[in-house]
Image (cartoon, rainbow, N blue to C red; front, side, top):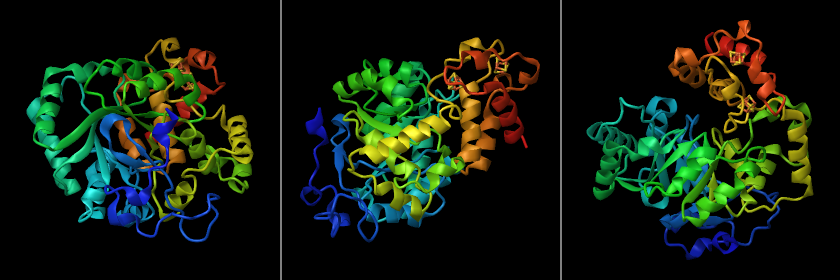
Length: 388
Ligand code: SF4
Ligand code: SF4
């Protein structure tokens, strides 16, 4: 397994091409060198054969194509977007950023398929065509079905036919899904040929419980992409971590990449500063200082972060409130700087799954939460925040 993660010589890779001229060769491994940090390691994404930077770029809240181009100049080769990010604008920005260098980057996008309304072959193909137009490309390297909780949708005949046709036409090279429910979906993915790459939550709080499953996924040759690597992005609230000798985001990325099970991770790079800070974690082993920073974060933020992939409180709620989704949207609002998007996501949630009646409830969800979150109070606050 570890041999898969060996350093892929930057200059020996025709795929990476001219974009890497003058990059990290010979630089010290400390990450403290002068000038912008560079990607130092490339992995192969499962059996796709795609070579991807260990630290890659999520574009859920990125408004500046120049930041994407800067990330590329620093060695990032994998860029993740979605039809739904910024109401399609994220795809447009990617298209602008990579015009003329399309063959030097791996681009993935995602489409959410609501059941039953979106299960239509022609409509799925039309949506992909529109994405390709915005991305200014003839193909995407990987097309994900977005945010599924169960693989049932992938077995639908219309969905299978649409993606088979897209692959045959050369518009989609590989397929997979993104999920906030890895405990269920990764297990199901093991026997589903549609799944060539998976994008799921993996961080120092939620990763350890998933490891046996992720190991099987790796053994099945499925590419693994980690998201939500900061376990809540709460460091802005934790004064003590702001000026820590080891940056918390870097420590969190290093924790994720220390696993031989993960091919790449996609922290959102919304600014030049994000690019520089996150890339400094490329190919840097976890050391004592980083582990101490993570331990501190876990102590201070452990009862603040709703583990999105956990869901243990859901059966306890008699009203079917989507506790983890609601708290995730509140996290986007408060900790990701995505206020408008968070409000939009919340507006799209079925009314019956919103925490509208939590004030009149004793809060069985809170008793069921193994991490000590003040769930009821948080839900009430989240509803107020997201409907303001
Ligand atoms: S407070 Fe009650 S209604 Fe609200 S999520 Fe918890 S259990 Fe469900
Ligand atoms: S509130 Fe607690 S139990 Fe519920 S999903 Fe979040 S972390 Fe899990």
